[in-house]
Length: 113
Image (cartoon, rainbow, N blue to C red; front, side, top):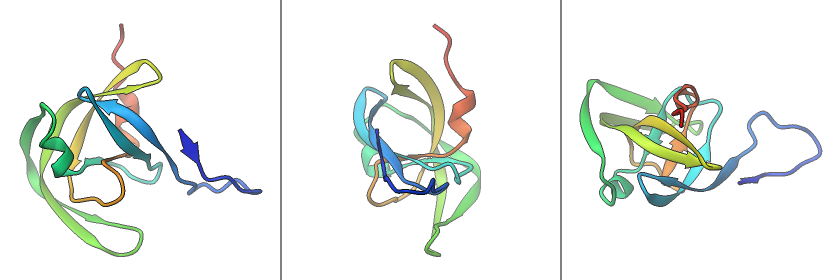
């Protein structure tokens, strides 16, 4: 994992790294300010994902004011971090710079061995 370093603790510091999602290495951004988790559809095309329709169209606003829309979610994706298995639902969104953005929703989904 990598984090921006500085003298003061920045609550919005970028934390990212390469991890395994559905057996594929991907670049993940951990975003403590996001309520949902996201995956680029181009990456999802290289995985075995259970893609489902969302009940509603999800509108996502980025910190710079861009608005994205999605109606699809990859259900129960396997996320491996430091040998621990998590499952998360990743909304398909044409994000840039990262393959996956993990918000706060996946933290409650630790799979017990």
